[in-house]
Length: 596
Image 1 (cartoon, rainbow, N blue to C red):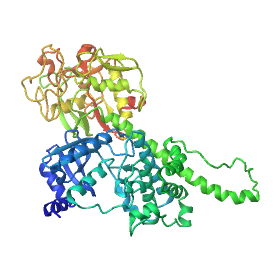
Image 2: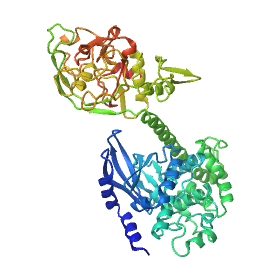
Image 3: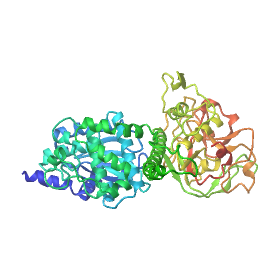
């Protein structure tokens, strides 16, 4: 054996060294934390992506693959197939990248322990049923997308603390393992523990092969050992039957046992035929009872009924467990789908810690519209780094019945209807801030966005929150100083968001377009000292407050303290940005919550 290859392979099997190498070469946007899972074909690492301000998972591939000409292309092909997957029980791949000799995958955050850690623990029936059903849901979905996993093993099935299953390594695992075997001459330790007979014979690998592997894994989960553990595994998978499950195991796990019996059928065509009804039932999310108690009279049992009832109960218990598992899986999938819709918007937020500041115009008289006065913000919040864009608002128009229904929102002239959907009008940049949007439509956007999240509320900032974030700890006229910043306040039109940073993290907070805030407008509201702690404006009014200048305004109107009524600002120069707060921290926005 080539000693250089051997040492490179050894490096691959030492996840700590691979993690240290990744920390040296990966860009600073990634903050790497700890190793989550060490597989035979890569290392999963928890990380934080500063560019998207969210927790993610990275899969690091061994450095030895970088020297193999075919590796990158084959991995890329499999990753492109994985991009088709968007299901609560499958991994979610975002991008494949390479830095120096390190190839890595960016994934949505993955939680859980591999199924391997649960083997030999004498699992409860509900747990085993739940795991199997979610695995079947994931595989049936993937197969419908023409995607095969290729290497189903206990290490590729992750289970979190809520017993939610995530199936990882679609396509990638077998591809990388085959390349490592070829490059290093090292055979993976799992060998044929979970290999289907047709795959061992060199025949085509199909969805039937995947169900065989899953049946082997479920056999191991119930008994503590795979169907075949020692000896010539290839010969045994092709020609022999495993030790039958103990009757006590079958009685505790009837549904899983039935799947194992059908899944371990040697002939792949007969295997699929045998599993057809079970797979159809699971994939359609409509489990149906195979037995009924309709014929039993209330309070009366015949001797035959007394004999049948235990058998019927044995059938109904797994059916109930399947229904429960499918209910959880369907709800998890719906939550995942809404989460993906929210993530597709590309929202980025900056945290604003609680604190005190001086709000208003330092030069103003006591009866001014916004006199200089102290204000306390007692709760931290997250504010969008950019104004809401045309593209983000268009996503709302096209999906406004997802998550939470809203009324008929304003449609700006920058988008046009095509059939039953909206598209950006010709020549319009979707990264421009959306304008021509009334306060109610901005709030509808927030309600819709909140409906896509289980733990956060999205809403317009209060006037005090907006100014607190814009000041960023300063008492200056503009966020960056007392001289007007470089910004378009000369009537030339709005710029794409993200063009000019006005604070350490916020873009165009005092220019580009003016912004709606939550409060009703009252010119005398801040003259009262009572309105100095988390102020949210008067309870009613004829219009709402607008903060920040726009491309139609002079530099003086772009000073931080300027506040106006919405009636004073032209619609084509008026947009909004949102804040995010924990759902448990409502900030007393009762009217907003009524709309939820």
